[in-house]
Length: 389
Image 1 (cartoon, rainbow, N blue to C red):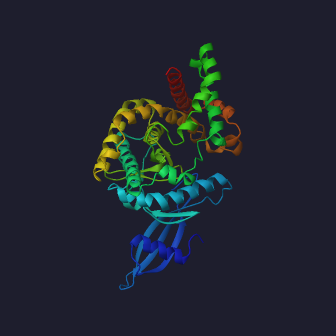
Image 2: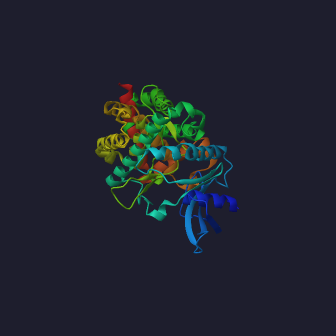
Image 3: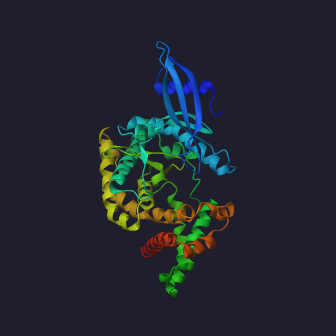
């Protein structure tokens, strides 16, 4: 049994913000529509009545649990990090934001989260992995409100999130000791080296002697910056972690906070633009999205008369260019996992070596080859630009 009757009574009282409620019964069923690598998903239905009234009522909630079928310790670390973030930070931060940017959390355990079911309120994931311009505007509203809430929280509590909670915001996904990422870098390097446009002696020498070292600068960008202002960032803002409201003028909602980190806002901006747009669309929408983000950030801070906390536009633009490396490299590495058939993804593929499989799949699947080539060209152009800085 996932939840006890007493836990469900507590959840009911947290949802309704009152104590005089009688839990009649409850049921938990698997949510087969929700798919994710770092959790199992359920719908919790609570049937209850007000003690002074006898008419039963019903509410549905979303439950995320630690994957039952997984023996990977990393998943447990991710899950416990997310539970802590919801319980300790997000609940407090949302108080400093008139814009709602995440689902309400009503109950946490080290192995379980109970959240509002945002689908009941009309929120839906995007129909395609490539986001539209209106979707990107809704996402910029959510990111800016989330970042502003973090800045205001730090100001009001006099707590630096990165220093106070460093032990709870450890990096589990982008680090030199994380095997899925290092094997991904090796696969990207092999893919770049295979492209016909980079077969000249000069290009091959650059790839063989300098490219990997430049890509590995992403590890430094995964840590708090010593140069730019840091905020609590989501750092996994691909389309599957964003839900959109029925009203186009409203903010999106962000889910899955297990990769939260304390870095410059540019890391979230680059991640969201590179992971949700093709190279062509990103180039067309990039500056508009940055401008929207900064405008929305200023508005959120102005609501609390704290414009002084704002990140200067010049710093935002400079840091965005610097952190372009993060978006470019992460997109390419992620493609070696999320763009291949599920049956490819064995433990050896993830943690030992996938270069050969990636090159073979590029030769056989034209759609994958085009996507991978686009990622690799972005990587090479970024690396050459940094080399010439």
